[in-house]
Image (cartoon, rainbow, N blue to C red; front, side, top):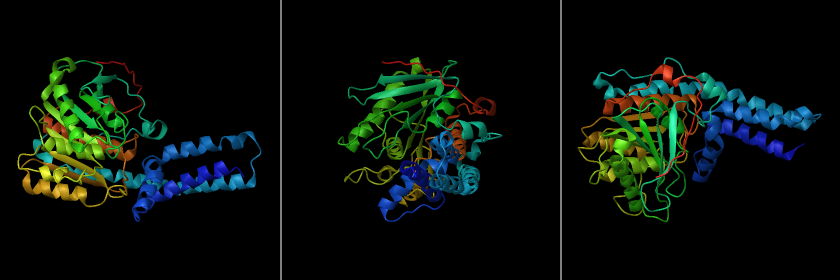
Length: 380
């Protein structure tokens, strides 16, 4: 028996099993549960494609009985797929209910008439997006990590709203334009300008990182005319540690860094260091901008309770809408691929951002189907 093939099958099968039934304790097991199940839980179709590719050598040679048994185990493990898809589809109801605080705007929630199943099944990796121009590695400051990428519609218009998305990585790692690319593509394809910046990481201080976020906002405002954006309509979003930074920066504004709203995806919202003001909860105030928090009920990487404590604090003190959606079956890093769940999240985030900025919303015809990105490289 090929030992490497057996290990591959075991990882796929275990990932699917942990997607359906994650292990939370001890914390090390929770981390392993997330690592193995993150992709199969969001895209079992991608896991199945990997199974087929890894099994291809069996076709060119007479397979041994142990290898055939391994293949059978791998195929059988996909019995969990219907349950994973059903839980992912349940995100629609959770998100619809969560959006009630912004429903008073009178604008229709722009749910798609149908999910792009071909893309979800056959092309889940977010490499390309037709109609989106990507300009990379603009400088916004002196540090080597002070770089950002700009996503914009190929058809130029002025006074467009702006989305700034901050990557995750636990304040120690991560890179721009890796997290939430389906969201960046969807927003840019539908009339928004999107910025994905890098920021300083450990051993830099949390204060340094927060200042980097404010520097990105100032850069965007200074370049508003060239970018074709309305500097009064800026939404700050982030994933994981980036969600922590996005919400904190939106609450603890500096001169020229106010934003229209903040969005946190599977965020960590506790203290980033030993100081008492390194958590977003410590900056909650009555005039906070609208905030949307989206978290998975199967997140085994972030300690439970931190996101709900932030939501409760915001709802108790802020006069602005606070949207909170808990996604059934969602793990950490649910924004990396075109999945059933994240396609629904993208629509909900677009509905929220549209409502709080009165910006353009997505259209079914523009977002359905397969896409080919035509990137351009820029520097500044």
